[in-house]
Amino acid sequence: MNRVESFEDLRIWKEARELVKHIYSDLKANRDYGFCDQIQRAGVSIMNNITEGFERHSDTEFARFLNIAKGSAGEVRSMYYAAEDLSYVSGHVATERRKFLKSISKGIGSLEGYLRK
Image (cartoon, rainbow, N blue to C red):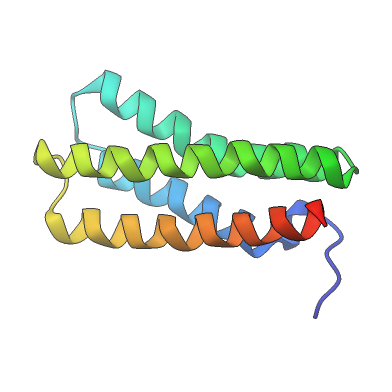
């Protein structure tokens, strides 16, 4: 196992970064600015809360910020249902994003659980 020296070394942060690119790409032509703003902010919140928690250099604080990131992942996952229902993205894209978000949430939850031991 590689030593984690910075938040950029964390798999969950890398996945959250990838997710942000998908969110912006999926909705780049969408004119529902309120919806786009909300899902984009929630997506960026995932990676930023992972970062902020890591930079606190305290397992307790890191776990708390991971919990917030996990909540944001759930919000984005929920919004992909709305995006699908409103035909902002295809059913295939929505399903793939929700699957990816479940994986991110699971990884965040695993790290959070480890830190809370």
